[in-house]
Amino acid sequence: MSGTVVTIAVCLLTICAMEFVAWFVHKYLMHGCLWFLHKSHHRPREGWFELNDVFGLFFSAVSIVLIYFGSRGQPVLLGIGVGLVGYGIIYFLIHDVLVHRRVHHLFVPRSGYLRRVYQAHRLHHALETKEGAVSFGFVYAPPPERLKAELGAKAAERALEGDGL
Image 1 (cartoon, rainbow, N blue to C red):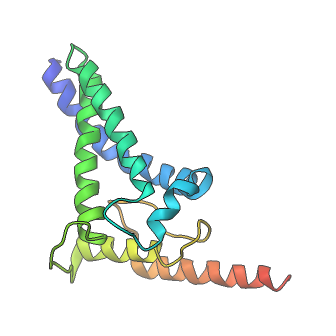
Image 2: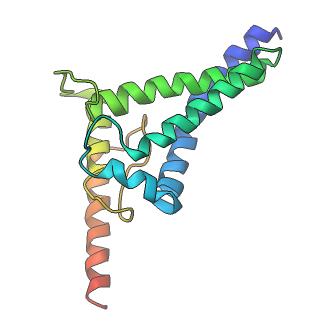
């Protein structure tokens, strides 16, 4: 296979794989030991930047390094680096622009996939705590009805724990 074909294939695989990586990082690291960075994202933002943006800077730096070394004859590294950039663009457009409106626009998704992603992320932000959240993906969104039921079940569980039962 030529280097170009390898780079394109790896790039597309990386874009797909990043949703799983992002889900894992979001659920277990951002809502775990790295909550001190991520909690800024669950609070009202003051200004254009938030401490949570460190995650974007980290993945940007990783992609720059991979593209640098990949462009020196390593098509797999180049594909991973470009795939990270591709996923970053998709993430930015869906998460930062559509859902959080970090770029002003008037579009409101009324149906279909974009509405589902929007609803799922709003349900993720229903709580400002690191425990009890739902929907940790950024591009894939479970049905809102399922997420609402999951939030209700978790709230009932917390209520029972609070009662000492």
